[in-house]
Each structure stands twice: as C-alpha cells, then as structure tokens.
Length: 484
Image (cartoon, rainbow, N blue to C red; front, side, top):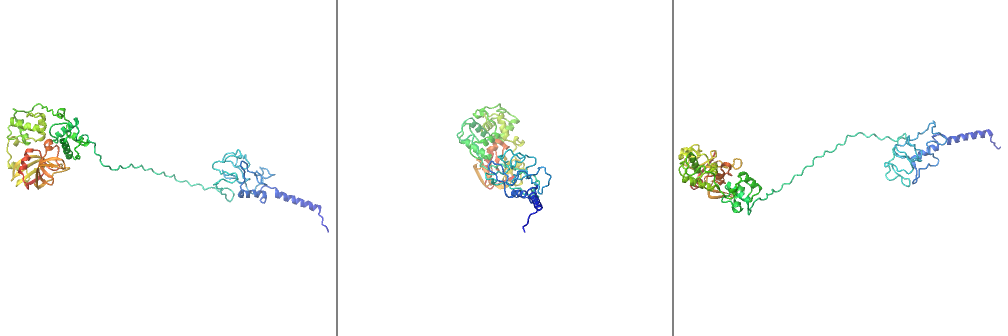
C-alpha cells in the first residue's frame, strides 16, 4: 500500500523547517550560531591579511559591523558574549573588534593611533606601534600581545611601586696633583769671576765692611773677590761657589750699608775732627784705653793726645779703611766704640791687675797651674799661671741655638799659627785647639762687627796683638776651662 502524505502533515513539516531555519540563520549572538563563533576563533588563530596600500577585507560570512544582518544597532536583545574592547593603543587583529569609544572609524578595520582619528588606509602608525610588511606579517621584533584574563579583558599591569629617588653619587673633588720633588735650582749668578763695573765696586766695599775684603776697590771681580765671597758664603752656610747669586747678594745687603760714591772709588774724605793732636782730658783717656784694648796703644793712659796716640789712631784708621789722618772724626770714633767696651777705672787709672782682683769671681779650676780660663757669662778670657792673671781679652762664642761652645775642662792638644777653616773658608790665625774642632783663635769678623755675630763653636778673640802673644805662651797640654 502506498503511503500518501496528508496535506496537513506537510504543512506542519514545512512550518517546523522554517522555524529551524530561523534558529540556524537568525538571532543576535546565539551560543551555537556559526556566525557568532567563527569570528572569535579567527581573532585568536588568524590575523587579518592586508595588501600594500589596501584596507583589510572582511572574511566570507563576516560583517564589517558589530551587528548581524537584520538586527538594529540599538537592539536591546542581550548578547551571550559581550564585545571585546582592545587595550588602548593596541592594533585590532579581528574584523569584529570594537573601536575605541567615541572615535570614528574611517577605514574598514585600521586601528588609529592612540587618541588620533585615522584619515586613510595608508597612514603610518605611531612610532610605538608595530608596522606590517608587504606580506601582511608584522615587522621584526613585534610588540608582545597583551595578556587577557578569564573574562576576556586585558589583564591589568601591576602598578609599579614608588621607588626612593636615586641617590646621585657625590662628586669628590679632584685631588690636585702633588708636585714631584725636584733638585733645588741654583740661582743664576748676578756677578762672577771676570765681571766688572759699578756693582762689583759695591760688592767689594760691602765685603770690606765685614772684613772679608781688603785693599783698594777696583771694580774687577778677580781672585781676591772670589776668595772674599767664598768666605762670606761659608760663614753663612750659603754654599761656596765664589759667585754672587741672588741669595748671597740679599744676605750681604742686609748686613751692610750702601757705600757712598767716594767709598767705591777710594776717595777718603775725613770728617770734622773730634779729638786730635794737642787734645787732652778724660775723653782722651777713654780713647787711649780703648785703643789699648785692641793692642794699638802701648804704655800708660795719660789723657794727652801726643804722637803715640796719633800713631795708634793712624794704624786703626788704615786697618779699617778710614781716611788716615791721625785725628779722630765721627767715623773713626763710631768704629772704635763698636769694637771695644767701656774702660774700667783700673784701665783708666793704669792700675795693674792683681792676682786677687783677677781671681775674684773666676772658677776654682782656674786658680792652679797654667790655665786658659774662659767665662761665657763675662765674655772674657784670662790667661792664668798659678792663680795669677797674665792676660785678659774679650771673647765671643758659638750660637747657643746652633753651634754652642762646649763647657768643661779640656787641654790644648794642637797649635797652628796660620790656620784655615776648610769648612767655612775663613782664616783662623793663632789657633789653639782644645776640643775637637773648637779652638781659641783670632777673628777678623769679631774685630769688625763685635758681638753682632758669633762663631761656629770656637772662642773668638778680637785683640790681634794679645792673642798673638798668648799663642807664644801656651804649651801643648795646658789646661782650658770653659764655664758659665
């Protein structure tokens, strides 16, 4: 039997098929709708392919809009899966990506730069956006895709914790380079052997004032000047060169006065006479006593200015480059007073020293035997024989701060009549050695400058005649006592 379809059944079947077609084709975002699922899958697995200068085209079966055909943009029908909003500034990789809120889209699927509208499909993306090559693939080193969370929204980046301000390194001051020690440069000589002229004359006279140079001023730097300069340099520890450098010249100037024109040219003009032949009185006695202290005057002090006194004055003047007249002018008197002490009543009265008077105040070690008795307090040397004074002269000593004269009891172990200091390049006439390099001897510097200077440890005597006599009396082994 052949079945025949009942018209009513056919009508019912057609109605069911139509409803099924509506379910399969229509509806906004149905969960099982192929049109709703396919774009989401393509968003993850297939990036859009674009050609050079062409806009991105929609895939078959996909729409360019976020709504499906037949539905209204303002439809109130709920969606099973809300549209995903891309992170700000990230490119849209699927055709259904929703553009940033409030920004118009002028190209099919181009993503505008952050906050800027897209005006054409060929706009160059911002520097921070990845670009695509001719094949549609991203350029090398693409920006990593954002990580999405379970809800499909981009995972929020952790908020960076505030960090303390970076401490700027403290710039330590650049240390100044320490100069390397160098050998002390020797000053360029101002004058040396062979020099001539006005300055040499001044040099010679300044050395003459200190008894280093003797004779006439010539203006020629010869051997006598070289010897005088060496002696001066060694005496002041300036280095013995024989040439005058800046240090030597400044030191010499500080110790002397500027010579006059007449002095530099050996023109000696005497001043007004203070005492001369025929003068008499106590002042003449003082003059004679002072000349006697230096060995220029012999005999008794009389107070009468006669021939003996004239000759004594002439000798003193000639020795010290003073116009030789035999009369005492101011220059002669100033020089004599600087080199002597005020005469005692015994000296003015020609009272011979007695053993008791000379022994008074002397150290007890000086009262026996043959003794050179030297008092640093009184600045006196007394030659004693068996407690009796034979000679008394002025003396000076070494600097207590540098080269003090030794104190104690010694013996004379060596005598040299015309000695020479190799260390200080100076003459040491009538040297009587008693302790190492220390000796009793005549000093021209003491005779010229008095107590303005000092020795290097020796006992200086300025009485040339007295020390010459003492030298002949003293024997090797005689006692020497130095005390305060």
